[in-house]
Length: 212
Image 1 (cartoon, helix red, strand yellow):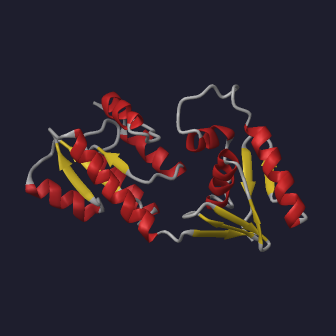
Image 2: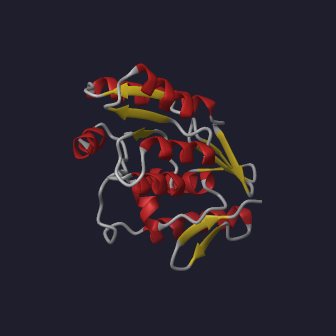
């Protein structure tokens, strides 16, 4: 079922991470930013409810849909009380699951500020407009997506693999796409307007924009 769901969501244009057990699920939820998490309760190594409690203790805004064979009313109530945003019982219809995910994702986007700002860089995520020290600057789509992701995660080191995963949104050969070239182009444009290096390289780990 895990493999089938992953294939289905990738075909629909989603970027998907999967976990086969509760320990891995909790680790991924802690180390990545997800629009929506689909969580089974009957997981090996660590129960899904325990994973949900850990997710909720770290991030009260994370969107979580429980997808479980535990279908009694008491199980649903427990899952929702533990912090799930929605609950679906198995068997289920994939189209309904996708619709619920879209609904939760829209709710998340509606709550987010459409303007990101750090170190003189202002990004309007709604119209994809970037202003640097009050000067509008145009970036090609890939460069825009990289800069937006780094600004969203300012203060955090972002690896090349994570950038590829979120910007290209597909399985690609890590050696066929030169993240360094895109980063270099972005740096040159920002240096001209900011007068300083905004994107720092953390050797062996990735890139980051420091918080002000």
